[in-house]
Amino acid sequence: MAKGTINVSVENIFPLIKKFLYSDHEIFLRELISNATDATMKLKHLSNIGETKVEYGNPHIEVKIDKDAKKLHIIDQGLGMTKEEVEKYINEVAFSGAEEFLDQYKDKVDDAGIIGHFGLGFYSAFMVADKVEILTKSHKGDDAAHWTCDGSPKFTLVKGKKKDIGTEIILHIADDSTEFLEEARITSLLNKYNKFMPISIKFGTKKVNDPDHTPATTTDKDGKETTEPQKQITVDNIVNNPSPAWTKQPADLKDEDYKGFYRELYPMQFEEPLFNIHLNVDYPFNLTGILYFPKLGNDMNIQKDRIQLYQNQVFVTDNVEGIVPEFLTMLRGVIDSPDIPLNVSRSYLQADGAVKKIASYITRKVADKLKSLFNDNREDFEAKWNDIKMVIEYGMLSEEKFFEKSDAFALYPNVDGKYFTYEELEAKIKNNQTDKDDKMVILYASNKDEQHSYIEAAKAKGYEVLLLDSPIVSHLIQKLESTKENISFVRVDGDSIDKLIKKEDTAISKLDEDQTKTLDELLKEVIPSDKFMVQLEPMDSDAAPFMITQPEFMRRMKEMQATGGGGGMFGMGNMPEMYNLVVNTNSELVGEILGTKTKKKQERLINQSLDLARLSQGLLKGEELTNFIKRSYDMIK
Ligand code: ADP
Ligand code: MG
Image (cartoon, rainbow, N blue to C red; front, side, top):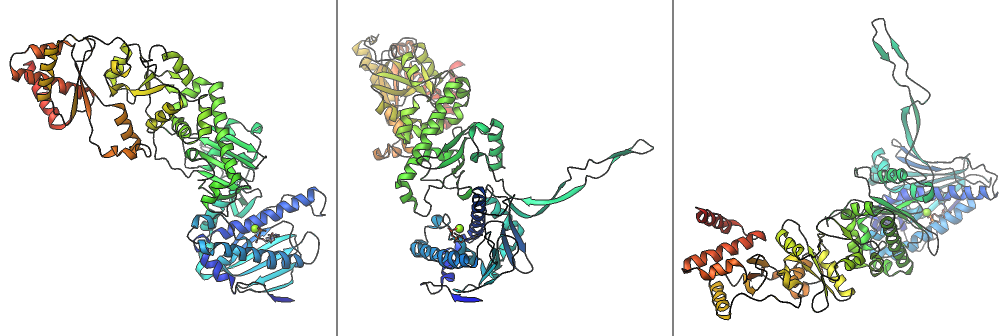
């Protein structure tokens, strides 16, 4: 019998392991199952290349709880180890790995996210066990080996009794870790980390209907039918799907398969995804995965940790920040790559060359997919636009490469539900909506109902009005204005329509200088100057007499600040709302105001008109609204 002391410089590594990895004890199971999987895959490989006499067959990994004896078993049918190999791989390699890990991470215990992403390998077993045994028999045909270690660096290694090839790890669960003897706890761990591991994992048995048994139905003398109970059989409870959709070739998958896999990933999600993107590269890095576009709408507060990261089918994390470009974290699905370094901090990750390549590959794939969806079935793409535009607009804002490609699929709907690409939009409006300074003015509304009268005024001029209603649109148009040549976006209620798109021929005022002065003074007396800037303008006589507008610049800055970023530096958020009151000097009503004899009546007309203008902007509320209604009734009496 061999006895020994494992050669470590850290005096007693086990308390350290416990301490440093306190919050993530549960990863021991993932580590041990990963080892079992590796051992099985290695045997498969040896068998494929004819380097072993062992029949590979159809191996599985078994997890077994022995609650009474407080033991947890992990049993594989992999290549096993000889005594010498246990000596080498467990005592030397695994231990030095553990030491190295602790060396590297003992100062970074706060970086809890990272520790969970990086296993400590075999020795993580000591986080939950006070004694660990390895029973193993190598495919090479040597004697079995039996290693025991009680949580100090002392171990024993003797000849074992194991008959079948493979390895059994026995954990004597420590008193502070008995949760890992609970079936429900283990089930949920297997579900979290091992749901898609490549080797079948058996955990207990379950009862299912016997496929060979069809219950017979008998009819008694009264004609009453009775069906005998369905026979049940006991089968292995296999907890994982060893070949999830993302490991298959796109050509072998149908739309139904993708949807089925989505349900497998998100069993509680009842809404189907809009479409998916299958990622599949092996050069210059390895990456597979499937991303799904869920229905997003205009809600910015969507849960972002829905993409799962795997490494060779082992779950690593659902926090893909730094790996997947930010705008795509709104999507769902999985990515699997052995090339993503996980034992590093997030900031390092973001600077890592390979990871950058991965992010830009994913961005490109998503852009290509959107382009082909648009080209293949524009109608369908338009129908989905409202649910995907947030991702696309966010991507256009945050990823330059994506922005460059987005002209091929980014859409600009008008208020009547017609969709344009930027190019189409430009062709459509260039002639009519270019102002005297040669700037192309793109008119938009954010709400069809609230801005109805302004939209109608613009349409009456033959202008096109877009409907841009996503919460980040102010940022997006800012970006478009700074990249496209000589354009500007203005919301339809930003000013009177003639001012929004200034043409050479300015209308002539019906009022002479004296009348204009009188009107101006009159208005200033009645209209509160802290709320409205009065602006006299000669417009078409049938355009609205009074109109409230909010300057584009100010409104946009406020909006941008509300949704984060840009505009903040101007401190606009704290500015009171300021509106312009545009008074159409050519309107009949203005003529009437000037023509009215008594001051009182004039004031009443002005107040009534101002209130009507406020009403059409949704600005008349509370007491003022009540007064308005009362005044209106008095007027029609
Ligand atoms: P790693 O898996 O990163 O190599 P571990 O500490 O998890 O590190 O394991 C150390 C080594 O012990 C493995 O590389 C392998 O050679 C051996 N080993 C561990 N578990 C098994 C097993 N179930 N079957 C065969 N070999 C194993
Ligand atoms: Mg390992």
